[in-house]
Length: 305
Image 1 (cartoon, rainbow, N blue to C red):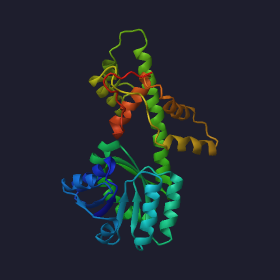
Image 2 (image 1 turned 90 degrees about the vertical axis):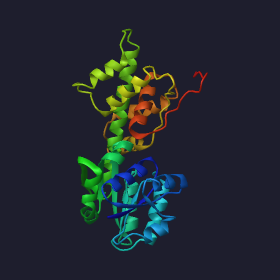
Image 3 (image 1 turned 180 degrees about the vertical axis):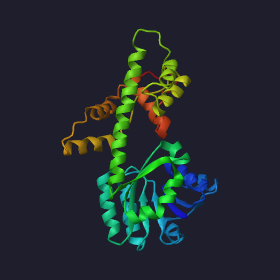
Image 4 (image 1 turned 45 degrees about the vertical axis):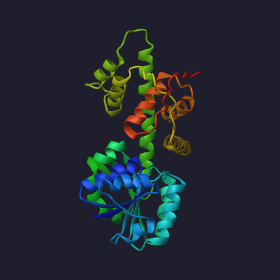
């Protein structure tokens, strides 16, 4: 199947190669010429602009978006609603707010264009080697693309969740849980570091990765990062908040559901201006390990107040 892919950043680029590995013909486009050229060198076909991409696709056209949430996705959805035709399919594989996805479905539905909101987890390695997908939206569009979703996801890592917005709602909650898990790991290691005992934190992480209740990918990332620098001495522990935890808490408040762990983990991101807190450094390197998020590094000679 030929798939149009708009957005060739870290996630989009790896997804393009995943499609290619499974014999799907990808036609990519990105505003960044550097991103386009890099993928072209790896055998991905690149469109010169969005119009060329649309015209080159077979009907029903399938266009997958891997764009930042908000205006980049909103404006692209509006553009596609005017240029696509009956039965075409738009997939938003980014981290849009679920309420935005509900509106995107309505905008496209006016012109009989089908929409799927696809929460994508697994970070850049998942996008490349097998993702976890949470897919809401038009049932017929999902049925048409089910084999494609199965190709690019890990075994049992794909679920159809129902009406539009449900895929991104599930991904929003997933990311809220992720915030709480990372914060708990970071705080635990800070207490271990300052316990007064002579713990080797690399060996602690290694031990917890073998048979313990808290073993898992995040702990594997922790072990890998600590093996490189046990004190995370060159890491500035300032951690960005990308939005999903905030949306999770806002939704919980609307539904009168208590979520203290996720709420406090979000507040801890704001408190991470205290760059030297070891827990914040731990969260920063975990985010980098799974999602390629930037980690602030100290310059030589820097001190942080």
